[in-house]
Length: 213
Image (tube, rainbow, N blue to C red; front, side):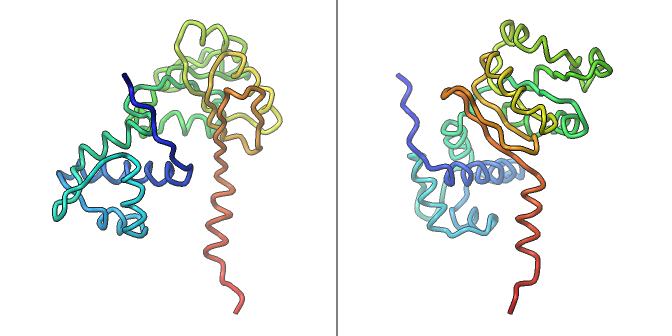
């Protein structure tokens, strides 16, 4: 019987994702064991915070040795749900959509891009990587013949909410929204994660701009 996942805050989930990235890099460099202090230093965090986060996984380190990198990676992947393959579609094949489709990190973390859709007739039938761009009108039928788990939304702001409804109607439970506008789910079963690159730059600018004395 599969154990239920522990209840973990969104802030902890975000940190765990960063830990996973660093641990995988450490593993590629040949590191077999790691202490929480080393993880904390790489990410600019407090050592005790890292230990608390890792304790949520039920993973116990050894005094003087730390944590086994492979075991920690597997524990985080299990909690995040990335210990399996997720079938993903891309909706919106403009400049941003094309850039996202070429990001190798998705595949490395178990997110397999299996379909691309757009409403521009000039793009339909052309290719993006190994995928043929399909009509947005064909999204629902495509999802019926493929087990689609997640959708990446990269359409203009004025089209975003309408496309969200089409994605929901196709039965896709998770949407990663790159459209420059907040969108609303119409179903309680739908999870939407907002990503706005301009907002991230604004946050960065706030940190860099000289503060009043």
